[in-house]
Amino acid sequence: MFLTLILGILAGFGAPTVEGQLRGPLQNLFSGEIPAVEMRAMSLVLCLFVASILAMILGSSHVLPLVLGALIGVLAPRLYDRFRAMRAPDYDS
Image 1 (cartoon, rainbow, N blue to C red):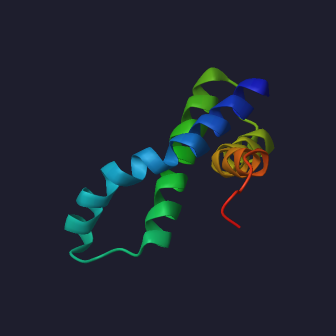
Image 2: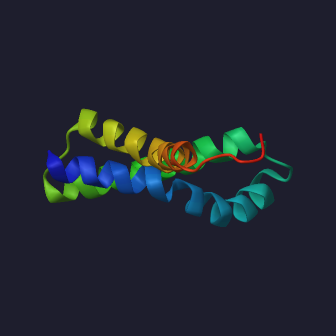
Protein backbone atom coordinates (compact mmCIF):
# COMPACT_ATOMS: atom_id res chain seq x y z
CA MET A 1 0.00 0.00 0.00
CA PHE A 2 2.89 2.36 0.75
CA LEU A 3 4.39 1.58 -2.66
CA THR A 4 1.11 2.59 -4.31
CA LEU A 5 1.16 5.89 -2.41
CA ILE A 6 4.70 6.58 -3.65
CA LEU A 7 3.67 5.72 -7.23
CA GLY A 8 0.76 8.16 -6.93
CA ILE A 9 3.05 10.92 -5.63
CA LEU A 10 5.43 10.35 -8.53
CA ALA A 11 2.53 10.40 -10.99
CA GLY A 12 1.18 13.68 -9.64
CA PHE A 13 4.62 15.24 -9.43
CA GLY A 14 5.56 14.13 -12.96
CA ALA A 15 2.35 15.22 -14.69
CA PRO A 16 3.59 18.76 -15.56
CA THR A 17 6.69 17.27 -17.18
CA VAL A 18 4.65 14.86 -19.27
CA GLU A 19 2.29 17.68 -20.29
CA GLY A 20 5.01 19.43 -22.31
CA GLN A 21 5.98 16.25 -24.14
CA LEU A 22 2.37 15.24 -24.77
CA ARG A 23 1.18 18.56 -26.21
CA GLY A 24 2.75 18.23 -29.69
CA PRO A 25 1.58 14.71 -30.54
CA LEU A 26 -1.95 15.36 -29.25
CA GLN A 27 -2.27 18.59 -31.22
CA ASN A 28 -1.20 16.74 -34.36
CA LEU A 29 -3.63 13.92 -33.61
CA PHE A 30 -6.64 16.18 -32.97
CA SER A 31 -5.49 18.86 -35.46
CA GLY A 32 -6.18 21.85 -33.27
CA GLU A 33 -5.32 23.73 -30.11
CA ILE A 34 -6.11 21.87 -26.89
CA PRO A 35 -7.02 24.07 -23.89
CA ALA A 36 -4.48 24.13 -21.05
CA VAL A 37 -6.92 22.69 -18.51
CA GLU A 38 -7.60 19.68 -20.71
CA MET A 39 -3.87 19.16 -21.31
CA ARG A 40 -3.21 19.14 -17.57
CA ALA A 41 -6.03 16.68 -16.99
CA MET A 42 -4.89 14.38 -19.80
CA SER A 43 -1.30 14.36 -18.59
CA LEU A 44 -2.38 13.57 -15.01
CA VAL A 45 -4.66 10.77 -16.19
CA LEU A 46 -1.89 9.34 -18.36
CA CYS A 47 0.55 9.39 -15.43
CA LEU A 48 -2.05 7.76 -13.16
CA PHE A 49 -2.68 5.11 -15.81
CA VAL A 50 1.03 4.25 -16.00
CA ALA A 51 1.30 4.26 -12.19
CA SER A 52 -1.71 1.94 -11.88
CA ILE A 53 -0.19 -0.50 -14.38
CA LEU A 54 3.06 -0.48 -12.40
CA ALA A 55 1.11 -1.03 -9.17
CA MET A 56 -0.70 -4.01 -10.70
CA ILE A 57 2.58 -5.51 -11.93
CA LEU A 58 4.13 -5.09 -8.47
CA GLY A 59 1.07 -6.62 -6.79
CA SER A 60 0.06 -3.53 -4.83
CA SER A 61 -3.01 -2.30 -6.64
CA HIS A 62 -4.92 -0.18 -4.10
CA VAL A 63 -6.87 2.73 -5.55
CA LEU A 64 -7.14 5.07 -2.56
CA PRO A 65 -3.39 5.41 -1.88
CA LEU A 66 -2.76 5.93 -5.59
CA VAL A 67 -5.26 8.80 -5.84
CA LEU A 68 -4.17 10.28 -2.49
CA GLY A 69 -0.56 10.16 -3.62
CA ALA A 70 -1.45 11.87 -6.90
CA LEU A 71 -3.22 14.61 -4.96
CA ILE A 72 -0.17 15.07 -2.76
CA GLY A 73 2.08 15.11 -5.81
CA VAL A 74 0.00 17.77 -7.53
CA LEU A 75 -0.45 20.00 -4.49
CA ALA A 76 2.99 19.65 -2.87
CA PRO A 77 4.87 22.16 -5.09
CA ARG A 78 2.14 24.77 -4.61
CA LEU A 79 2.04 24.26 -0.86
CA TYR A 80 5.83 24.47 -0.69
CA ASP A 81 5.83 27.75 -2.62
CA ARG A 82 3.15 29.15 -0.32
CA PHE A 83 5.14 28.08 2.75
CA ARG A 84 8.26 29.78 1.37
CA ALA A 85 6.26 32.95 0.65
CA MET A 86 4.97 33.00 4.23
CA ARG A 87 8.49 32.81 5.64
CA ALA A 88 9.94 35.52 3.39
CA PRO A 89 9.15 39.07 4.54
CA ASP A 90 7.52 41.41 2.04
CA TYR A 91 9.32 44.74 2.33
CA ASP A 92 7.61 46.30 -0.67
CA SER A 93 4.21 46.81 0.95
